[in-house]
Every structure is written in C-alpha cells, then in structure tokens.
Image (cartoon, rainbow, N blue to C red; front, side):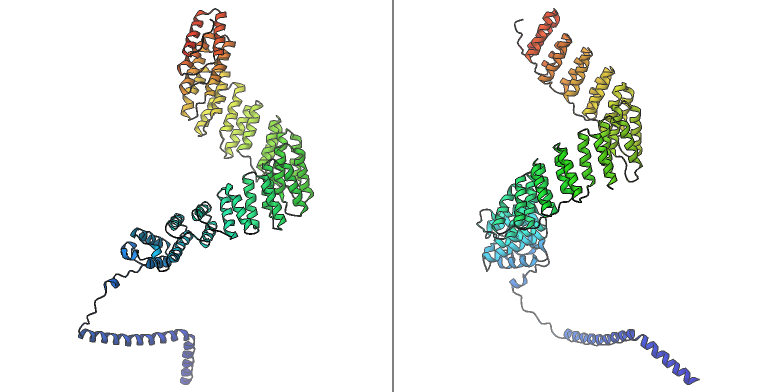
Length: 624
C-alpha cells in the first residue's frame, strides 16, 4: 500500500512539473540572471572603494572651442553662438538634417542664421550646397503645410541664391497639386520663373499648372499652360477634361467641342462627365443644334450617353421654348433604353406648365407613375402650380390630398405657398387660413411670401382687422417684412379708406422693421390720396418722402400730372413748394401746365402760390 502511494505521488509530481514546465523554466532563467547581476554588482562596489583610496586624476583643460560645441537636436536656437550661425557648412548640414523630422526647428535655425548675417554661398561647395539647403527646406515646409514659409524661402532663394532649377519647380508643383494648394502653387511658380530662362520640358509640371489654374478659377492662364503642355507631348485625358471645364466656365462652346474632337482623334478615353460638360457648355451658349450633333455623335460611337446627357439637352430645349425638340429627346431616351428620371419629368412638367399646357402635364405625370418613377415633392408641387395658374383650384387641392396620402412625401413651404395664393386669388380666404394652420401643424414655418399672399387676400374683402392680425403674427414669428409687404398693406388701407393707418405705417413700421424707405412706397400712397382727393394727406405723405430722400423729377412729374387732371391746383402748388425745400427738380412743362390751368380757372391765390413755388425752383414764369 505504501509503495503504491509513493508511486502515485511520484507520478502526480511528474505530471505537475510537466504542466508547469514553461513557468519553471522562466524561474530558473530569472534566478540565474539574478545571481550573475549580484556578482557583477559586488565587483563594481569593490572597484569603487579602491578608487576612493587613490588620488584623483586631474583632467587636462578642455579647449575653448570644444566646450562650446552645440547639439542642435535639443536646446533653444537662441543659445547657439553667432559664430556657429555664420558657419555656412555647419548651418547647411544642420538644416538638411532637421528637414527630415523637425521642419519648424529647421525654419527657426534658418531665420536665426540670416539674422546673424550668414553667407550661404561661403559653404564648401558654394552655390551647390546652399541651393540644396534652400530646396530641402522649401520642400519640407510645403510637405508640412507651411506655405507662407515656403514662399519666404523661395523669395530668399531668388535674392541670395541661384535661380530655382527645373527639379525644384517640378517638386513644388507636384506637392502644391497633391495638397490642393492651387492658388499658392501658381504664386510660387510665378516667383520661381520670374525673369529666369528655364526650359521646362516636363509634361507633369504644365499639367499641374493647368489643374491649379482651373481649380483657382484663373481661366485666362489655362490656354497658355495647355499650349506648353502640348509642346511637351500629347496631353492626357485628365488634361483635356480640365480644358473642357475651362470651356464650360467661360461658355466657350467652340473650345469644348474642339477638345472633345482632339480626344477622339488621339483615341483617348472620354468619360461621361466630359461629354456632359461639353454638352452643357453648348446649351449654356444657346448652341442647341451643335449640342444635338454632339449627342448624336456620342450615340453613334456607342459612347456613354446617360440620363444626365439627355436631361441637359432637354432642359436647353425647354428653356428655349422648343417643346417639340424637348419631347423628341424624351422619346429618344426611351427608345435607347435610358430610363427617364425624376429630373427628366420635372423638366417636362415645368416646361408644359410655363406654356399653360396643364392637360399635357397631367398626362406626363400619369405616364411617370405608370413607368414606375415615383413622383417627389417637387414634381407634385410643379403640377399643383400648373393647376393654380390655370385657376383650377379644386384640382390643385385634390392633388394636394393625394400628396398627403403618400407616407414618404409631404408638402413643403413652396407647396403651401402656391396653394394659399391660389385660394386667396380665388377669394377663398377662409380656406387659405386653414392651409396656414395645416402648414404650421406640419412643423413648417411660413415665410414672407406666405404672409404677403394672405395679406393680399384681405384686400378683396377689405378685411383690415385680419390683415393687422396677420401682420402682428408675422412680426411675432420673426418673419421680416419687405417693401412688398408694406406695399400690400398700403393698398389695403387705401382701398378701405384707412388713411391714418397708412400714414402711421410709413411713419413707424418701415423704420422699426429695418426695411429700406423706398420712394415708391411714399409715391404709391401719395397717388392713392390724390385719386381719392385727399390733398392734405397727399402733402403730408410727400413731406415724409422729402424727409427720407429727394423726390425724382419723374415722380414729381407723375404726381403733378395727376393733380392737373383732378384740378387739385392747391395741392400741386404745395407739392412744388415742398420739392423746392429739398432742392428737388420739377419739369418746367408740368409747372407751365399748372400755371395755365390756374389762369383759366381764375384762381388768383393758387396762381400766386404756383408762381412763388416756380421762383423757388428757378423755373421760368413764361408769358404770364
């Protein structure tokens, strides 16, 4: 039994040792290293004790120039002696070394050496060494995004060192392009090449310069760079693409077509973007026939003609009113298997509605839904606008109801604005107000156009109270009124004979709401007062006008002619007197007509007032 127990214990210990073999090995190695370290430490302590008992050895004096040796990798630059900062060999070496990892420190050392009066050309290799230093620092600053520092170095290089070589210019342009420093790249190229006779035969440089010019919108330089590029060999597809962008930006349709033709001749790949840009250039230049020829050539060559290509030309035809050609493009799309998009149908609907072809617009709308192209808010709103323009308010409301039933689509501010205007124009002010409530419940904020439409609706019913409430609500909602808002309110007040409210509006609200006091507002109210024979109020409003601006001779002529037609001679005399007070001008013919009328009517007091006003205006009294 004891033998069995001993054997079992031995086997158990062996199994445990095997399982912990890694840990036991680590402990053994650690113990060995600790013993070795202890032995080495004992020897070091013994040696230290011996050295304490021996006399100290005096070290020889260190030479002054050796003790002043500076390590540039640490410590402030300001601690470097001026003698070191003037040492061109040392500074050049340190700058080139720092450019690899410490660009700002390299720039700091560079500026400090300049202040110390360093002469870089005094380096061992002369201009070659200084040129390499300038180049290394310039490129390092560009890589680090320190553009201003790079420009400063380039300027110093032009002043103190040799002119930048082709390799440096090429590196600069590649870096500027890759880092999207387009305007800066052009500036640096101009600095580097100014007055220098450098023949650059590297296509990459001219390609980068062309791209920088396009991106910085320096289009006048693009042709020159492209010509230089062509002189170095065949431009790439990207270069031609950039030139097509130039053509589009300058509406040079001939250049666009020329670039496409050259690409085809050189058998270069032409992307759909290039074709669409060239096509859009022709459309923008109103060269629709040339655009159609380009589209046909694209199709014949089995090139990419996508929905954007067709939409671009269709929009051009629609804008020009060539609806037959517009629908021809639409049919060609379908024939060639290009599915019309929401934009396509939007172009067709908008064009038809502008031509008052509402029935055809409805057909297109139904075709769109039938073909599986789901209408969006813009398309629904466009058709609603068509119904509203045609006075078919009920149809517009019906379409609005359909729109509300769509889960992923809801009316926007423009939709409600069109519907509210349609109801106001039709005299349905109550329905328009309900739409306003629905709009606000949907979380949409009414704008100035919505409120102006509602205010216009109040004119038909002469509902001043509602108009005032709407205006107050508009101000409370922080919707700023415009000149159009005040013009509508003035029309309302004039129609409802609320002259005091109208004058108070001009006196207080125009200024308090920060709206420009345009003369036409005052002229509008003066005219309304005159037509309603409110002479005193007309003069009061004209006085307000004179306080804000000097009435023009054309406005004076119009108001005085109204006075003459209505025989309001006293009012005309007062208006002329007020005009003279602000040195406004009055046409002598208008004054003569009023004077003649006063003589015929035998009104001596008016005649005297007119003569007095004419004298103030330096107008001739005539034979009278």
